[in-house]
Image 1 (cartoon, rainbow, N blue to C red):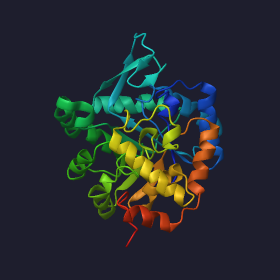
Image 2: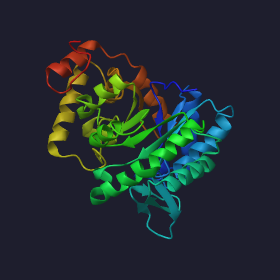
Image 3: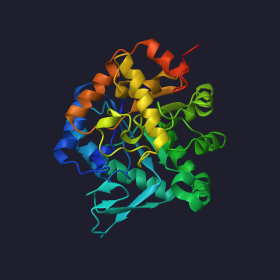
Length: 329
């Protein structure tokens, strides 16, 4: 049975120790609070803490969700190999599990990655399997080789898993629009998880990709609705601002401040507008922020449920800050 995605899900990079260490207790509290609040979609990946996020998600859901009600998506494209590095931070993850990711999009690696994820997640199956981080943004000069591996045998392995009933949906989880458009024309794609490309600060996915997905019935999940954090809190109070995983350039800071000012004028927190905006596009099924801790989870739900006047979206559109698909429709 093909799962129906809820409007709000939870991403798990944060409980994989992205940028900062998170205790096992806090990770468990995050997932448990989400499930208790009725959230039934969790996205993860072997890359997040090199198995740590999957382990923590699996351990908590084994207790909170013994009937397997939750929809879980995970990813393939990286094989985890033992690491003896003593570095505290690797690839942005702090105090992660002792493995090193190696890219491999070929058939055997896809099947092996899927099996290893099931073990860490303590599940007989996952609902959604996504090829992770294809494209030049991640791979640079190696992008063509990895794409060749995926098209040559990796995607076929994912299709076999789907047709055998091991998973329900297959797709890609990426940060690049171009790779989505490229693959849509070549292989079977049920779902695209695209991070950071349909937000208050970046609506580039709305120009071509989302309309294509809507026409073809491809589900879209929006990750990174806060663009790595810059939209999650008032700009002035953040000490370590990030936009797309790095320090934001001045034009982005200015745009974020303008968005915040316009939202404040109508009594709407910037973060609430950021969380709800992606869902205004009819192609978008779900948005998956990455709260850490029960308090952040509660705050996320409050943001999702906060009434936002239509006049705010009209104001942002008229000011040229946001291209809103519903304004003028």
